[in-house]
Image 1 (tube, rainbow, N blue to C red):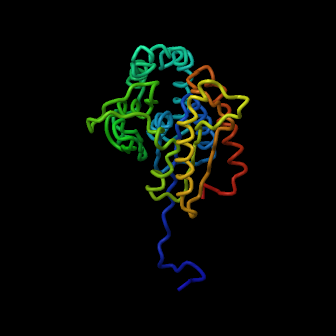
Image 2: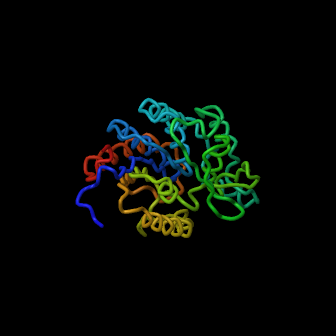
Image 3: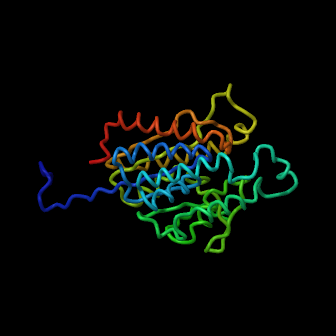
Length: 286
């Protein structure tokens, strides 16, 4: 039986906005600019989902989803320009792999950076629910966490294979970057029954042939698998869920760990977010 209008006795589904933070290495700085625009537009999350660098940004924001927290996060990113939390230029340290080391970097500088700066010690101490994804290094399966030690979990979710070492977590398994399996974690976000998704997408795209470099060619297999998984996740988003997709335009296709790009990325993220907000046909503040 179809009703011409919603009967008064049928409860309305409570609005639930979930922010989705993708991975994207240093391109994650653009998410800071995106958050500025979203906060100024009055768009706030009821829950946050993140992987890789998006887990770090998302965690900080979930602790206090306000503009002043975004300002504090921006200061940390700008601090990283002067004191990068990853030692040296990974692309110049291929020799470490050839000498049998499992990763370009030990992860110690990043761990110290997190220990000195995390707003709360446990994942479940955030102001709004926060969900972080890691990839089990033994099974290749993604695992989702909403409690546990924040430093270890953030370090694991950022552990891009070959760049940073796997991290042993509370389940006694070693874990890597959650973006390996779900770089735009829409499936997890959808499982939380949202009415609206705000997707802060800084994931890498494929470069045209004339812009390909040796490292981007080496990454094609990984990127192809990641792109296909992302397509599947986008296809699984229910039609009745509103989506505000803010995507960094034409991101660099290389393995981007150059923190000198941070100021420009923040500005670009803010610009693209303002453009998307002004053009969006979905009013996500309803």
